[in-house]
Image (cartoon, rainbow, N blue to C red; front, side):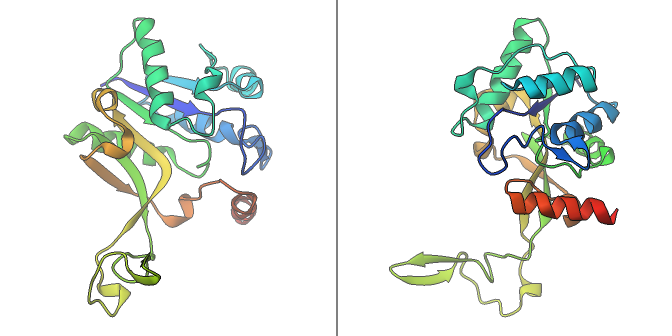
Length: 227
């Protein structure tokens, strides 16, 4: 099975300005994903999808990767979907005569993943008849117990139930954004959120930090200080 690792790292970011090249413990944020991808023997090629000169310079000069294309500006907007970014990269490689069975999507905003997590996700994908493997962590926020929707001015449990203790509820999971292994055939047929055959890979909560705000960044810095 051939795996293309795609690391999407566009120039602009609202929550954390310049986050993809911002230094976290003296390492550019995008560098964490590049470094962990280079450690995996299950990846055939690493693709940096970016419109940022800063990211291209980091990937090329610091990590010795060839950035084969610059992502078009129309695919680098706040409204651009991950699906469109992935399809653009797949089509570029196919135009170069390179085809892949699966995409490994590594978002730079998840710097604390381990290479064994990636390898295990790919192994699960190989053994499963699925559209996608996604990394998750168990969440205490549960729609059977303490998550509510509002209807006509009143709130109700998101999923109606008679549970009186959270411990008795079915487990629920948060997709933590760290690792996605996606069938290229499935990607060409449907959006990520439309895929039905999705298999989870559970990660410990401490590795599931997702950097979207400056508060998240401060949390990540504190974690690194403790290591």
